[in-house]
Image 1 (cartoon, rainbow, N blue to C red):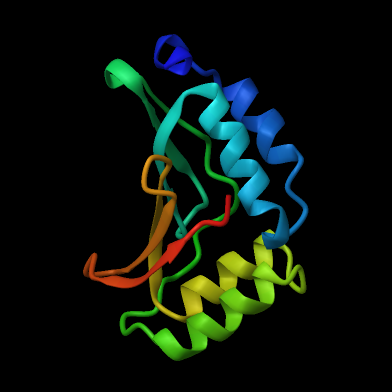
Image 2 (cartoon, rainbow, N blue to C red):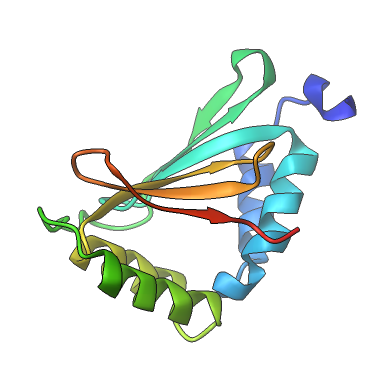
Length: 135
């Protein structure tokens, strides 16, 4: 696989992320990251920073995107699913989605490129939802 040799940069990640206007753009964003050689990443709701992982132990961490959001102690899966659906339909922007995640007790999400899944976790790192990412 040609992208196993790639060592992506923060600028490349930022450029790919800059194309995302709503949750509806998420599948194309994932394809862009795969092309860069990202194997998986984890985004943390508290401050919006993301750890990106690549081949051969390559890792970069983005800067926090906003001031700390308090994460609700007890997760609310039903409310989260409602908010996620709105976001995926392009009805909320990214900052709103992150605030909604915090209110629903979502600590982070992890995206795995090979599996094409996005998994959402609560504060105790319990899986709340696993979704297949459309190709």
